[in-house]
Image (cartoon, rainbow, N blue to C red; front, top):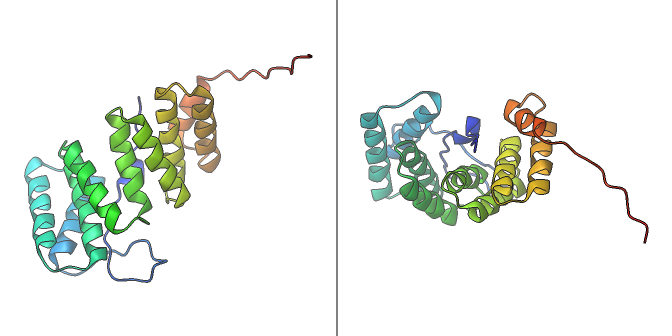
Length: 195
């Protein structure tokens, strides 16, 4: 199974903002900002275990402080990214779940948690998260459709998988993983039988 993480692992940091704002990057020196910076680094390069541990510790400090609910949600989601990069999938899932409980409009949180569910064979949970990411119009919509296709195929729902791979390709015509998966399919139209 091929999981597509691509840009879907971009870090998110929330500040108090109108409800229509999805995410705001902090440029301050706060502990929550340090947590954001550590999570952002995991998307750009391989990060050493020591840096991951320091990033997680920074997130822990921020969470121990007096921060807003929106900042707490973003910090939990950022720590989840670090936990996932450290190979602690269950801890990451728990952090995504806690962050999403505080801010259920965070589409990338659903996409990222869905990818962890998919990687761990929890296909129904993965599909539900990809459905939610799609409903929230996640920025990486093609990745949400592609990964939902992976979950559908792993569950034996080949027709739904094909449709999701096709939708991913329509959304991002140069997205190679969708092209590769679609090349495996041979679509045959059945004629309606006469009764």
